[in-house]
Length: 241
Ligand SMILES: Cc1ncc(COP(=O)(O)O)c(C=O)c1O
Image 1 (cartoon, rainbow, N blue to C red):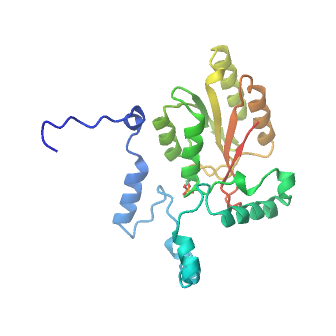
Image 2: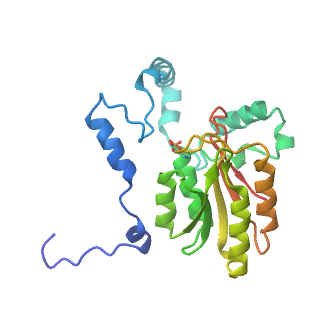
Image 3: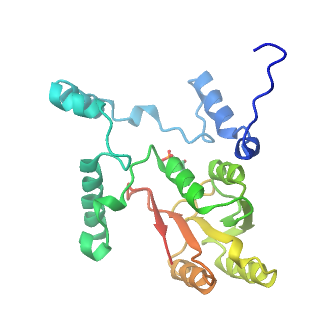
């Protein structure tokens, strides 16, 4: 690029996107393999299933027909068989049929992790200036995503029982008095082993959170985004009220 080249014009979204602390945290962990970095969320590498993954990839790639299919594009929702398997998995976890759950494989999207799912949900729900209610503190990587989407994040405290639901109610009442209820898009709640506190939303608070979201879903639905039990490996659920 010579000196007469005009500077690249970044979008307003790119300008709102700041360097994420997770980059430095991961880089620090990578630079020092002996460092046990609790901040970056790295998995203990000794627990990673290298042998199982080796066997699966071996089986897949040693058969030319399967290998070609595996390396080819698939539908944008993700591998159809994987989505069917995900549905069967959820049926067994919830002990309900797909009909009872009201789900078909078309309701599933395979993402590279819950961070990508969070990003997509933010992308389809949030316009700049829209309000997201979150606990303080919340998973900081998503807070960065919300900032880049231009969301106004309003926080409520936490206690030993997780997100303070009465504070959510009071905050929504105040937003309504200020005439801004129509800007509230989502309550972001990590209900099991919240990051970074490790706190779990108590059983009593869960239905109350739904009631509150319903109470304020006047001009449109206030969505609740909550991450499900880590033992339920589908990671998160998106509750429409
Ligand atoms: C609350 C929460 N949401 C999302 C993520 C991102 O998860 P993934 O690695 O599946 O993208 C994490 C990772 O630590 C998390 O703690």
